[in-house]
Every structure is written in C-alpha cells, then in structure tokens.
Image (tube, rainbow, N blue to C red; front, side, top):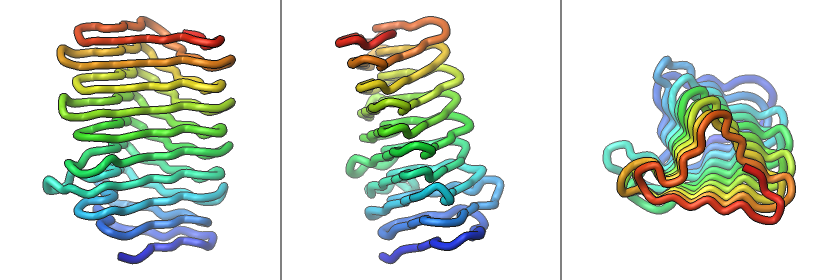
Length: 239
C-alpha cells in the first residue's frame, strides 16, 4: 500500500519499468517521467492501484506503454487512471483492462486534460475496460480498439461539449470481442476508417446522440464487417 505523491513544481525521474500493485500515484503539480526506452507503467497487477494526474501543471510521461489493470504475469488486479483539470499523460501504447481480474477504467475530464497515446489505445484489452472522456477532456491515439479479443468487453463514452477521442488511423468497436461506444451531449470521435463488429465473433455497438455529437470517419465506416454491428444515430447526432 501507500502513495507516491508529486505535489510541487519540477520533475521526478524513474528509470526502467514501474509497477504499482496495491497503491497509488498522485501528481498534483510537476512532472513524473519514466526515462527508460521501454519504460512501461503497470497499474494494478496483483491488487488495486490508481494513478491520478490532477491539474494544469501536472504530467506523467513515458516512452513505453501504460497498462491499466496490468496483465503482467497473468495477474488478477484492477487499475484506475484519472486525468483531471488539465492534467496530461503521454505514452506510446495504452491498455485498459489487460488483467484477468475486475474491470479497469480510465477517466479523462476537464478542459486541457489530455491522454496522448502515440500508437494504439485499447479499451477492454484482455478482459473488461472502460474509458470516459467528459467535460472537454481529450484522448488521442493512432488506432483505437474497444473490445479487442474474444474474452474482452470494452466500453467508451465521450460526453459533453469539447470532449474528444481523436484517432489518426482506424477505430474498431468490437474488434474480436464486445465493444460499445457512446458519443453523447456534444462529444466528438474521429477516425480514418471505422469498424463496428470487425472480425468474426465480435459484437459492436455505437450510439451517437444529442446535438453536436459526432463520429467523423474520414474514409469508410463498416457496420458489421464480418462480426455483428449496430449503429444508432439519435436526437441530432451526426455520423
């Protein structure tokens, strides 16, 4: 147990991989940087762990991946990532729900809050994961997956004016597992190609509801590519 707290300006540097088992990391001011080339951060391996990046002067940076609900060593824990009130997290690959335990979650909320994944972001990587982007928060990734494998269930909700999940490549809702995407109350999701029910055995569902809510697919949008897919556009939502 315990808490790693960074609450003053400046930078805390951690070398190598960093694993939080049953504990918490809270950044309310300043920067925590994991410097190793493969500086992965595992949150919630054998227990329950939380990382919170809170406030406009707070950052967590790594060149490696961040796993929320880490599957390291076949673990059964759960993890939570909170990015609030202008906090920023930068990493290469993001996974939420990569353990065989309880549901893990990520919440990005408030203007200026940003989770930047330079490569992929997966919600429901191995088992159960959720993502909530609200009140002007932003998530960026190259490719997005919701419900990646046959054992996984992922749910992503993008809600409120200014809330965004931007994918420079594809977004797969129900890649091989079960995926749900809710875009509500002015939230916006963008991708190159979009898939709802991508592979055989998958199940994808997308609801775009409310004025200003949008899923902007720059190229093609497939509903039930080879899996089962449902797309609902309601109450002024736009696809």
